[in-house]
Length: 130
Image (cartoon, rainbow, N blue to C red; front, top):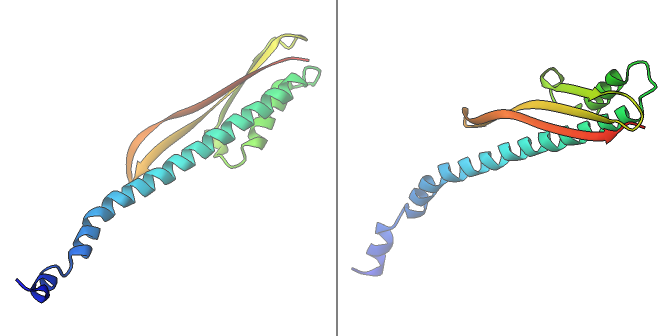
């Protein structure tokens, strides 16, 4: 078999290999993208809970310290869907006691329209009431 015949027989080989590998590459890319969105939501939720706990720790003398902490969490998590965000604040509100702020936010990872996994992100921070 000479060189010209061999080259003619291999026409389209790269295209066939690309067609085989492309779906796998797309799934990996979309998976990375979905994980990035999930991680961003978790970091946002954690930062918002930290801000809410700090607000709660210094709001003992306010008329509504729970409302102040909840508002701080919601303001710090403006990128999240507020109707899906649940915030809980617990404390005895005496100086030196602990205040705990917990927030939950649902997530789902879907690849090409199929939900792979779903659940709830949870973040909790405890600070001492001043």
